[in-house]
Image (cartoon, rainbow, N blue to C red; front, side, top):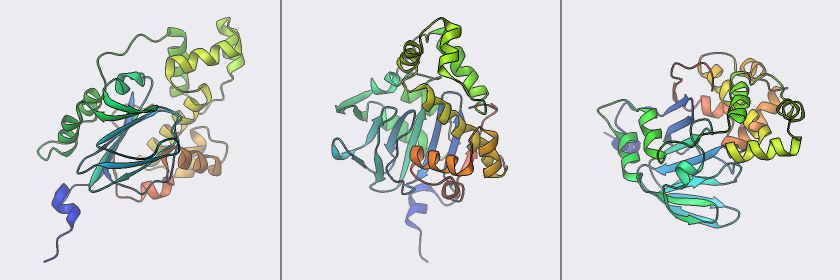
Length: 262
């Protein structure tokens, strides 16, 4: 009888899983063949059965067990074998430095070899328990997050709770008594990504939540604030590296937790 090599690695009935939590969005499963992509938030990737090969414009081809990419950096990741962990780090949960500080080496802005890589692999592949997204996230970050400027935290919370709304930086800055330039610089400093990029990310997360819950993908995208379905499709591919339709057809089990917001 023929045996599927992936079944030998991951178990006979194991399905890839993706989750959305306050502070992080993750995926454990096979390499989905992503194209070069540039997320609006930071990303940690771990090879669960072998090394990763990461292609970057600045540093060429990098071979590593785990890889950290700050927000707004472009890369394409290939698993040498088996499954991967892809963890998108919401600035609301911890700043990018909370993970970048845990990387043993660096190549330019990218971090290589997470100090708790083995623990992360064990948590992702444990056969006797369900995947625990919060435990994985806790192992990935280094200690408690520093206090965020409450003004920026309030703005970010409103964006997460209402991604369908249109927010203007000049109007928000005026309410804070700041210049638009100062506000935008402060937001990026505190959240590690741009004001506009964070709005796009929040809309992506809301759309995926809706589609994974069984709603029509196009309707979910419009309800999340995208002007058109094509705008959503382009944004999703730019950030994730594949189409949303391909992702939803990949046999992934979605764990949305109990929260209704990104």
